[in-house]
Image (tube, rainbow over all chains, first blue to last red; front, side):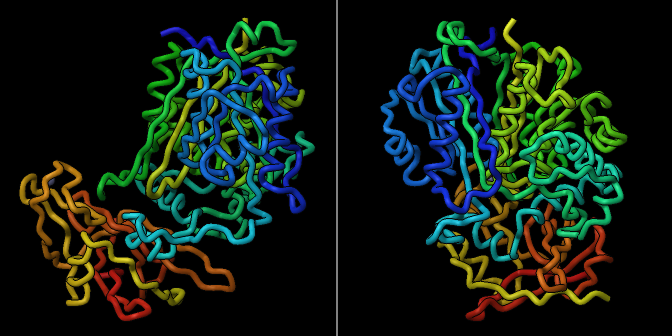
Length: 386
Length: 132
Ligand SMILES: [Zn+2]
């Protein structure tokens, strides 16, 4: 299989992390305008629109109306925080199929300033409701279950998980927009307050208002633009769940998503120069690194330790913007910023202190939903335009 | 022993196909939805077997014992903690639950636990576990 004809041509991350005075639609529009401007295009050029469940109103429609655009193709696939990684694959397929020429993907969220009259927490039609929410799950608790089991099966330690946060903090110090800019140590992480054992506060991502947007265009359009474009060599998506009770918490849907992406791209993990890896929690990164094939199952702890994820130091520079652990997790959804930082790296536009030299091949990976119950995963293999 | 945070339980919605599960709990029994065609149990209970899609199902009574598959001690704002866990209640049937009346810091994966019952707001029994 050959790479997609469609190219990633625009990427924009809202610079702020707290937006008490902005509406959600306004934030999405700011992100969209930023991304089309980055590409050297206009919203008038957009004829494909992709969004996730963060968008206010019914599916994609309210935002399409707010932006006053008339796309001929829409997709509002929703699998949680990784949705925007999936949207890149879906937009590329739509462009290749001639369904649209210029695709816009948006995300925004403002969990620090919740909407008035938000949706009810419970849904009596949700079949799993009584058997989960009854027991007072929290988001960290549903990831802690995976961490605890991985530690039990493979001897993974809190100190090894801490290295993931340490690496992210080394990158965040160079990002002026990062919410947390202080470099932290392994001791800082394991001594931070326990949230849901074995996960400490510093094992958890930040909560931020924010967002971002991406533009894809067919190659013929990309060639005319003044910006470096990015090729999409491989994509994969998957959903994993409890399997009617037969759940295995030691690996994620990323294993299935990555298998497809590697196969489609013809690339192998050792070729990847930079990786954006979804970091809702440190354990998310550790499991994904194993599932993506950067190391064997159970070897993630050893792989991430001793700064191996730090750009300029380790074998696998990851999340050079500071990631969700330190910089931004807009709307509790980190997939968009994963793709944006991969695009920056492939354009040579990451911060000089963290830019991977001559970065030609990168990976962006997302996990959405909950590792403890059901989650989606998506993988992209991306390359610099030759 | 660290006292666990005292849990309160909302009334379950009780979808039609799960009624037998809730009724059994009120009789002090744990039942597992089990397929008479392929023999496998599943959880949460469905109207058809999620393994072979047969609707030939029964409520199979368990002896109420299980083993901890994974757990976490969730800290509560203002102090205390409670345990959120997966307990294996039958072969490859792992159920989300709370483990109560325990020292959260002394629990171990693989530890034996037994079913216990806590009332919801209106008195429906809710399934939880305690160390065996
Ligand atoms: Zn069956």
